[in-house]
Image 1 (cartoon, one colour):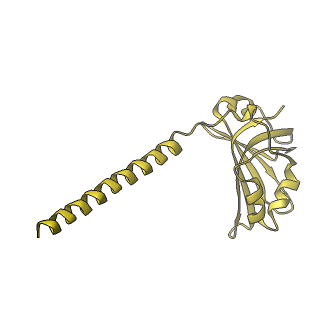
Image 2 (spheres, rainbow, N blue to C red):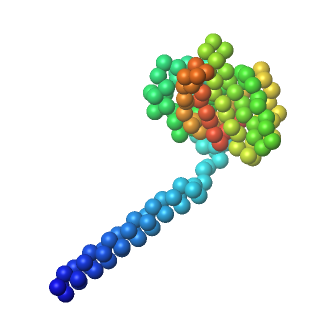
Image 3 (cartoon, rainbow, N blue to C red):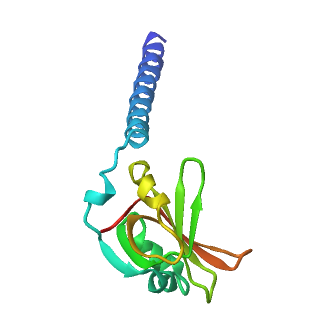
Length: 154
């Protein structure tokens, strides 16, 4: 009877220690992801340099394949600005394919906000950013490709 009680306590102790180790590991992973810092996009070499309209067209027939190729990659996209959307704390630049209505949208890094705000629709630019991937909207019938941490590439 005493041996059985000792076995139960030993099993409970092992379970408690394992749970604590798992909790520490998960907490460490969360902390790493939550505090991850990225290099300044301006200083990072592009993985791809593409034309905006051709880039958008690559997503239209099969966005899964294009997402595998481009997601989380630094890409320099060149083209003519279709729209500049300025808000209080951010500026978004859009390249729109007028034939399909699909677009690529670029959110600028905080330190490059001033130069992004100076851009106008119709200007030819090259923008470097981290591609978040493309999503096809069944409702709108367009592909939306988003970028984060963007800067002008000069």
